[in-house]
Every structure is written in structure tokens, then in C-alpha cells.
Picture 1 (cartoon, helix red, strand yellow):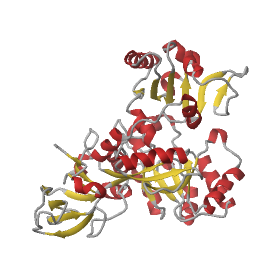
Picture 2 (picture 1 turned 120 degrees about the vertical axis):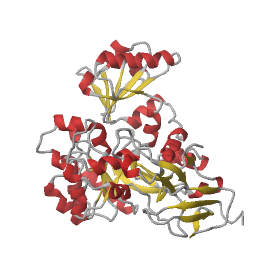
Picture 3 (picture 1 turned 180 degrees about the horizontal axis):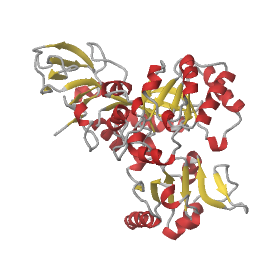
Picture 4 (picture 1 turned 90 degrees about the vertical axis):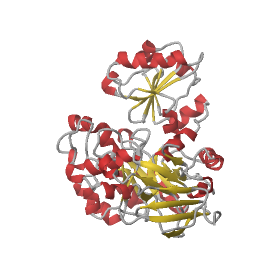
Length: 464
């Protein structure tokens, strides 16, 4: 009977129940009982918990992969520290190679323009992304790589029409002008697998045919192991390697578009049979979304509020009535909570990154990382949803805590552990809840299995 199963997981536990064996064959759970026959991949699970794999419901794949190759300025709190980090990276780069940095905090250096960045590095092109991901800042050498105008609205110019070096929400245009290829997803995908993530939703607002081709190829070539759902534009094509997700609506409070133009996009999505998902970080952005949904004929089941960072109590009944899904990012509490406590008005804090009150109002909630802007480790987001703890240990909105098991469910991939189900699953330490109470980032995953690769064995196994 050695060829009956691709993998046998022996002695796993389900919610602390009695130990049981699971047999996996052809990518699915094919048997569940005690004393299954042995196979070549016969794994003693030592009483660990078997759970469905995790799903990061809002991530930016290429930006997160690029972060692995960038200078991280998150911990730089003074311009001198930023300059030192950039110069250290430049010393490792080849002649004329771009220096790319992320996580620049305006508290450290304001919002640098080309002149300020020239003072840090002038002899090679530099591009720096701010902590929100909305803004790129380039030095003079970087701007020279972009050619001549006319400049799109995304490019800030001075009264003389000369670019200042600041580019707002201009990722697609900047990528086209620079001409560089997106980074490989292989290292990121394997890190996600190590953390137990078996499915991802890429939330890129500019995803279209080009991005579909790149991500589809990554899926087919094994550079992206996770099951993929893609948001994007109306021209995002359907394709076998991924699921086509909602049309992504991205707009900023600082420059809100004509509501009729957003409503027209929603109507176009409806004609395509697609849902919509709107970037709603501020209350104003959320109000615009609710208004344009009404203008476009109402909500379709599956429409989403991305982030939902600020949801006032007065709007929760409307959101529940409409049936909108909120995709929250509690990981920001774990990374930026102290900043929120220090800088936000006390009256606004109750509406920040709601969880428990949304569920109590009957609003469906999912959790996404928003990586690279939020923590890529899903267990950090799960912990933050469960304990609302800031880096200092202070609590932000403790009444919004939902408990670890509830948080886990909001970041679990669809599926179950029944015979016949796809075998996307993880083994975690039995004390995983206790790990969330520690100071270090949680790391409870002992093994990750993805059904379509099960014939090759586990994708990740601790200690192997």
C-alpha cells in the first residue's frame, strides 16, 4: 500500500481533539482515520494542529518582492540616518544602478524633493517610497532617467513646470518610464509558504494584461506557489492560472475624482460580471464609495471595502445593510499603533481598524496584510486583531479585539479539512495561541502543504 497516498500526516489534531491520520492523494484529502497505510512521505506530526492554509486577502506581490531588494528606511528617524543607509546601498550597487528605498517616514525628513535627495546622493539615480506607498521621491539623476515632459498629473512640478522629484500614485507610469522588470516572486513565495500562506489576493489597482501575463507566468513556472486571485482594472483578462477578482477603485482624499467617473467604472464592472473593491483609508474616501455605489445601481454580493481604516459608528448600519465586506489590516496596529495614539485625535481612535464592532453589526470581515506597507507575517496581523497591542505594549481599541481563533478564521483560505477537499493545509504548534503573547514575531508553522504540489511532498517543513 506504499503507493496509495502521496502524503500521510500521522497523529494530527483538529482543534485539540484526538489524534487522527490524514491521507493525501492527487492534491486532495482522500482518507481520514487511524492507522492508515504507510507511504514514502509518511510524516509523524507529533500531535500538532492541522489547519487550512492561510489566505492573505490584500497584498501587493511585486512591491513586497521588491522590498526584499530595497533599502528599508523604516527605522531611520533622522535625515543623517537616511543618508547613511542610502550611501551604504549605493556602495554595493554597480555604476549607474538605481538605489531603491522604501518606508521613508515624513517625521524623519519631511517630504524630500530632488534637492534634498541630491544632498544625500547625487551621482546615481535614487527613488524613495514613503511609508504609505502613495509617493515616490526622486533625485535629479533619477528624474533625468525619465526623459522630458509633458508630465502627467502624478508628477508634481514647481511654478516653472520643473518636476520637484515627487510623484504621487504614479507607479505604473514610473515603471514604464524606468523600463525595469518586476522582481522575481520566488523568494517571497517561499517565505509566505514558510509562514503558512497558501493563497493570496493581489490588490494592485493597475493590474491589467501585462501584469496578468507576468503573474500568470509566475504561477505556471512555480515562482508563485500560492493560489492567486487578482484584482485590477476592467481590462484584466480571465486566465486559468488565477482567479479574476474585483475591479479595484483607487482614489485619494487629497485629490478626489468626479464621483460620476467612479460610478461609470462600477457600471463597467457590472457589465463584466465583476465585483468592485475600493481603497478606503479615510472617512471621506469611504463616504465617496458609498455614494457612488448608490449612483451605479447598488451593491453586488462580494463588493469590498479595502482597508476600512476609519469607519465611524454612524456608517456601520449602512455598510451592514448593503452587505459590503471589509478587508481590514490590523497588522498596522502592531507596527504603527504608537504613532496613531500619539498623533490622532482621541475622538477618532474608536473608529480605527475596527474588528469586533464590525462583526457584531453583521459586517463580513477578512484580514489582509497590505504588505509591503503592513507586516508580511500573517501571524502578526492575527495577533494584532486578537490583542490590539502596539509596539510599546499599549493597547489601541481593546474593545475591538476578537480573540485568536476568530482572527485566524478571517485569514484562513476557503476550504476545509474534509475528505475530498483540496489539501492546502498547515501544521502548527499546539501552543500557537501562547506564542502570540510573546515579544517576538510569531512563527508557529511547522509544515505547509499545497494540494497541487503534494505529490512532491510538503512545500515547507521546519528543520528540513
